Image (cartoon, rainbow, N blue to C red; front, side):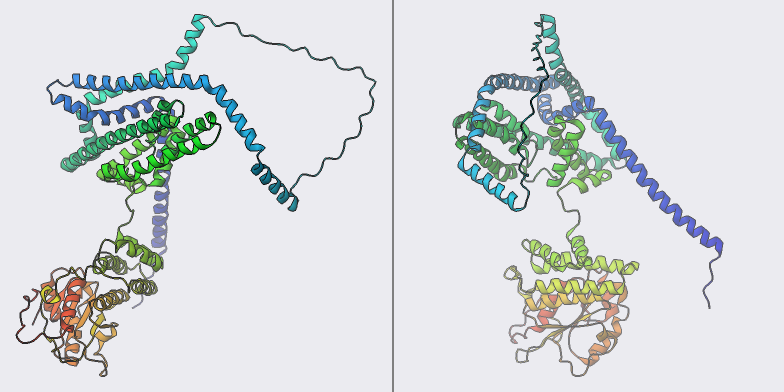
Length: 638
């Protein structure tokens, strides 16, 4: 019967639906771009208010534990807030006064520093090494004809009879002396912006600490009122983690700056307290903050010392301290990093600096860390953690599947070698490779993975299996003896019989063949010889010249495809009577029904059980007086 022809109206409707879908997708993309642009513009134009709010929020995370501790002393709700804020601002004002004093001293010494630097530059320019390098570079330029052409000699100027031009008279402009009001005005114009920012921070910090529970409830209502238990637990955990992170980070950076100041004072760098404070503050920017903080004292060291030894000593001091702090102290205290990828740190620093200037540079890492923690705990914000976090964006099985889809087995092997440092080979195949093949099987069931792509996946998986063939599984000694690990299947041979191989048969598809190749390797690693055959062995009994196997394992990735396995088992039993047969349906559930359907000796759901079954059948029968075995599996059928 011929298929019905589509009418022009149906074609028009289908075309309209497709066009509408494309239009809707473009509209969503445009709306997202407009919202993002509006948000960025709001951050930029509202920086005068948003920067103090950001500082206040971060300070609230640091002061919240102190406020809670004071409230537990029955000091009320308001007094602990004012005591904590007063203590914090007293420390900040003290640091500001100290920085001002150090900067004034530095400004007075700048002319002397400039003289020393000019002398060093002149000495470096006239040194033999520099002269030799310049001559060598000049020779290279001449060789490539890059040297400038010689200037032709100028002709002698002709005698002029015109009268000489008059010499201009020098004029000196003097500013009148500033009066008291003008001095006060200039001082206020310089101090007013930071004082305004500090006042806004103070006001917001007080209100955030006073209303922290109300703000938490509002945030819970905005993010997940439909699941209060989960959202409350997530936000409380995020708040505790952020508070602990900022407190520990502040303590580490304070200690870092203090040690830097002591070290610089010991080696003789001027204004060590100023550079120690700068180093501690700039270290809030991971990866590059410490090196930016090292640039200032190194420049001063070059200005005050006639040689270069002090510069190298300063750089070595920062290098050693940053190495000890970043590689030993922080991992021990944090147990993890900031939770952001290195690229996210750099991008965040560039973005917030562009939006908010120097305050944005200091706030970039704390703000991004807050966003990452919220994305980790709040489901609606999970995309933030995916984009900025340091966790792998793909699970190991997804990563394996992506690599074999891209026909990149070497990269999949590198991933396997990294994972095999923490897990045995059998666990890697069971928890990574086979779940990846299950993802591929799901794509096959959806009709999006063509047969030629399945063949490419099979080739890639067998390539990975071959690359891992020489892997030394270190857990062999820790595994229990095979006689204790599972039942002794029927058909176990006597010790006097010659060694036979287990026969591994793929269920139906190329993906089943890939799983079968993995099983063969695991059997070989367990000293159980094995051979693999394709699904054609299920359609008909193996040829008569096939060597009798020690056991037969039939491997499926999809339980929906084993309806004909019962007849295949009958054919195999007729060809190899008495040989134990196991059907492995990886990840299958309701094994009792599957066992009844397959009529095999055992029906299992993992490669580990299949390996144990085949190994037990392959090894020789123990003596008659050594007949104690474990109980038979619940899925075995007589």
